[in-house]
Length: 94
Image 1: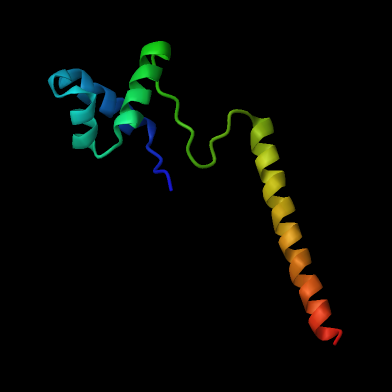
Image 2: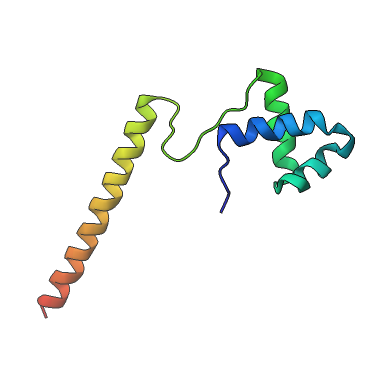
């Protein structure tokens, strides 16, 4: 499972790289305990936009995305409950 890093960690990682460029991206990533490609991606995003976007658990791009996610969870839970009821009916019906 992918580990999610908060905004502060990402900003600190970029600052660490900027002060330790002699180590290179691989060396800095190893020292920080993150993957080379992860740090490289954060550096690229920071260079292009001036910040590194963070999308952790529960953070959605818009209110619509949050509502869609909520409705999907509700639908999944309802389907699970329906499956349990169907199994109970089949067991009790015998």
